[in-house]
Image (cartoon, rainbow, N blue to C red; front, side, top):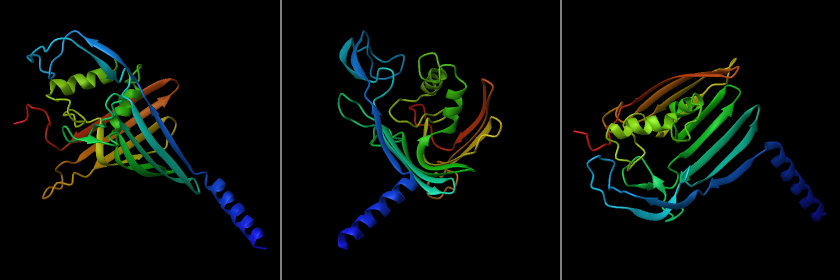
Length: 242
């Protein structure tokens, strides 16, 4: 009798798991190689001293090496709870990637979100790539992945604005926002929208450190269009800040 009860419990547990359609995925990429560089400098400054040539093991050929975990739990009625954790690392040293704070590494410096998806759209909360970056990638023939893409222009503008490259907090539109709340609507005849608000958490200032953005997209019949707005109420992290 005891054996039959245990079997029934096991079948019940198996059936509920199959119905919930839960999943957790571990994923990642290691991209590395050898680099020879004829000149080398300590910073992006055009007046920086040339330190000579360098030969080294280099992580990140086309992409940075990264790893992550993502999962979803179907709660019925078209609703699902999801999470995503993702961060870059140097495959040569094992060091994690940079956070918003200059020189400070972070385990999950790209994604650290929990959210809910439904027939009415998706709501994600935590550190994540800003909607504006996806809008730029979707309207770029190179998908913001290689030299000559919109990503090159974005990096160039931030470098010109004094971004030292020691944090992810670029002065002209950050690629990642921490503490962000992002809503993505369903697509209606190719039209969709995304709204973002990131509380700043600055004592004595409601607006200090906040980020707001909005994206309106159209994607249909092979045509991709996007309009984006982004506003960050924080200090330029570059050396030109006064």
